[in-house]
Image (cartoon, rainbow, N blue to C red; front, top):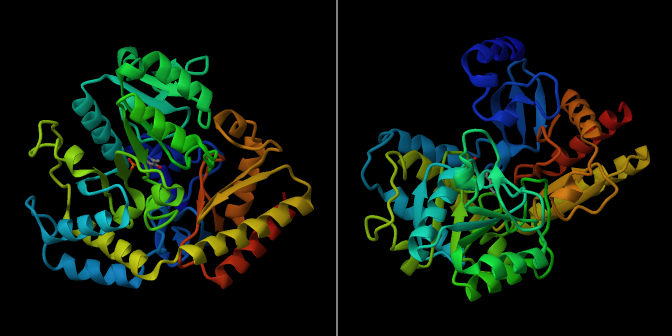
Length: 424
Ligand SMILES: *Cc1c(COP(=O)(O)O)cnc(C)c1O
């Protein structure tokens, strides 16, 4: 079997051939690849072609593919059975690690995806406050939950419009949308609607419009305003959790949310999400409290073991300085290659994530991100792919590196990128 054959069959069996739209490469064009194997910093497709991987399964694989410790722990647990549907010890172990590592979390509920985490967190916030409105930021992505899959209307702080058919206007209309990094619009939204806002949800570093760093006082302003108006603050740390630091963005920026959503790295490659916060808030969730939320496979033992082994390794080895230095090296290398070629670009980088935007404008929000030349990006993506470098197939996503990306990996990647850009 090869890429083309498998994908052709997939097209007849799965909508667009995929189980998540961006995998179809629509944003960049060309034929999607089908991956069959990953080891360390590399993946292989069904044609047997090898790639240096900066997609990292969209972020979860901070230890690289098939880390020996993780594989060993999973193998052991597999022998014990796959699912029980009642409490297992690994849920407690992973919860202990999360509470230890994430500053604002005292109690946590595991779910099966980032989407479930944000959906449940918003329900909890609405249940606790008895209010209806949710405030989000333009083009922050929080999974595909109806209330959060809305776009900005026209204007600076407006009620949302459905981001897709299938979401009633009545639901989208309960979401307020404000531009990222815009403190004035934020103040205005709270001034107008403060009494009705149940929660504000934010990516503390945006990863889903490409990497966008919060301005210095943006998060603390948001903390101040939510507190002053009796709204809960939700940090969606599905990407940033365990990536920016051991304790995520809240540790790095010293701003504590009321509720934190986690996913991606939390499961180490298995489908795991979570929401957590102070005990008095989390105890409002069923069965301790009245806000209902449940999951047949939540806390699955294999998924918990995979997450626990990943977090334990991160806690014990604290690879964050090293990861940041590697990302810096990669970013500087890419930067000098693109400069030599005379291409317009901006690199936004923090810790072990970055985005190369093909624009001359500083990227601070979605409207500046959109000034990027997506046609140039798509040529860049394809030529990199051809040379064996896998980056996310969209201008508005983040490159990730893992502890498996060693010096050789980076040097080889830069040499392939140089080659690729030469032929652009
Ligand atoms: C990936 C992501 C989600 C959604 O997680 P899924 O597991 O894909 O449902 C939510 N929020 C952020 C910030 C994400 O990056």
